[in-house]
Image 1 (cartoon, rainbow, N blue to C red):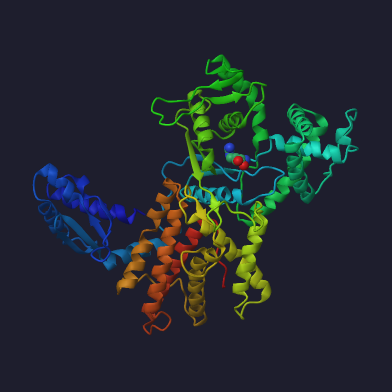
Image 2: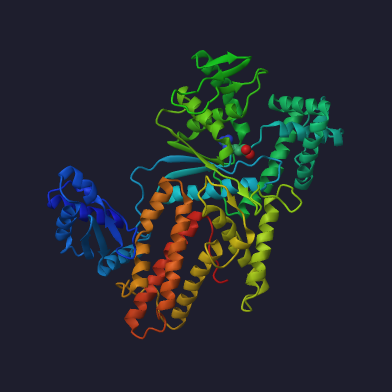
Length: 588
Ligand code: ARG
């Protein structure tokens, strides 16, 4: 369905044209004076300069031509030259009825579907998932869903951090603790055990222990660096350990991401890109892009218009080792080979922006990606505690994601268990669903690039701009629909009614904006716009609900119509929370 705003703009542009002015002046926007009108056009003000006449004259002439248009119930030209518009309730009704009859609620799929890879999550193997990884998972998942809903082919890749010093550290620590393990027997040629020599909790204890020791013990650190080198260069036993680390860790990560309702299509990691490095480096050298600078191999990526310094992109360190940039470049080589994407979106902490500027420029300049491939950095801000500092546990440690989620679930459970109709088991299940909405909405309702305060009390509240409030509104609608059905009504039967009062009109106008909101949210990679929309929608619905008799309405057809409006509101809200990555329980 053509977007409502486009339809209105088309009508107003036609009127400008008919009155002898350029159609472009007829651009319409949402009113910024909702007390006066619903939509407005300010084009007469701009046109006045070109046509050398008073803006009000242009506005009046356009208004005249719109008087008979059935789309509007009110068109007025007001000084100095605004065109104020109100839509006819019948027109809005027809628009919503068409939405109701459409499976996609009036959202057209893009005419130009792209293949898009979203690089998000980015956890590091063998380290517990902590709150720092939360934002990437939540935002990336939503952007992925928005893109799919728009009709693109979107591939989500977790891009595991599985190629760094942490691997060497774990291997070294394991060797110190259990030197008798077969992986460390240099003469061993047989098969290695299938069973890992550690559990996930052991693994999670080994890494920090090794990391701490390496900071104090220089020889130990050397050993870990050497182990890293060996595992990266084909040491059989170490590679077998590496596979164990990966398996144990990935199983744990899968469980964690599942709890977050986050799902990746690809579980690739930095290690998968390594085979592409030698050829890539050779070519960059041969084609003269890469040169040696103080022993290291670099590619210049600065541009004349830079306002801050962009250092050269390092390809190899002076000891020949590859770096984070090398891996990201090689990953682009691999992605092009396997998926030939039109676009790659990275959802990563905004503090890594310079790294991505360098990688993107280098990839473009050297032809690692095609000139038309879009590389997009969606950098997000820090999740802070109530003290305004990065979110920590009570004793100042890094907060494990699992514990954070468990905390929220418990809080939610306490609230939900207050409802005597809900059994403790159902309350547990529901608490998980509502808890997830609290976490995700709390994050997504902020513009991604901004830091935000993770405020458990606020996020779990059933009132205000929160996930639980949105779910509460959906649950409320569900319960009315259930009652209606219990009374023998069929919620699918009614037809959307024309608005009869202000609160109904406000609700209907909001519903009609749905397709525009989703399209724009993906274009701008801005899930927070979906949040802002459903918050407004939930408020508008609740106001309407307070002022309107629904099941108490005596006229049967009218009652069915109001119920139909409820059904549409519910569908719109549910579609929105689905792209945000959470769902609603049946009651709470
Ligand atoms: N593992 C990295 C980190 O924890 C994030 C990876 C982001 N993605 C990428 N392609 N560099 O900082």
